[in-house]
Length: 262
Image (cartoon, rainbow, N blue to C red; front, side, top):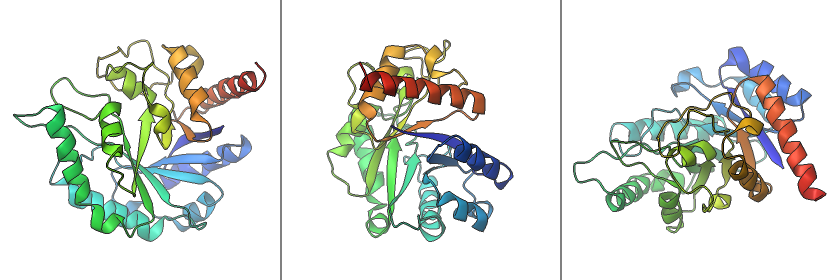
């Protein structure tokens, strides 16, 4: 089981977080890098210490593939990752990205899907020669617009875009109102394993990654099923609180022991 945690990419915090990972045997980290301003991101010491880990980047939360203004910013962000952050071991750098909301007066699921394929095609010239795997993440959805759910990303995956991967988020799927017991989430390259707090309603489109431990999550059977199918894919915990992280890791270790010794 490959369990990772999310850490703040700010140099003020990252070194303490990496030391916490070392002390607790955590080998995978996902970095959140603020607003994506490249001048604030690179740090030689940070880069050196990250080589001890399998590391994943998460793009800034404001990004949308459906916004013409955002595409140049996203391309600059990916170029910066390519220039400065590729792992020394030569493996592709995984970069998780939210997709954004499709807002159009004639919006429907089909139009949204084709708009996303069109947006992705504009990245093809730079990404085909890149060593970055861009992983699209399912969303919690919205009451007023269309956002890609797991079924939409499954449809996109049939296009066989070589540099494109996928990330499945447990809380996003539940909040989007998806049938969490019938999802092909095990086809994702990365899993964001988030507990579902009591105030997140199925289909309520509320996305709040709280400090709710996995063992106290709603829909714990769903969480257990995701764990069962994850195999060696990164299971990334998205809570910053170290006590909750340690509780979740112990919960996952117990699940692993039970599965090996039924």
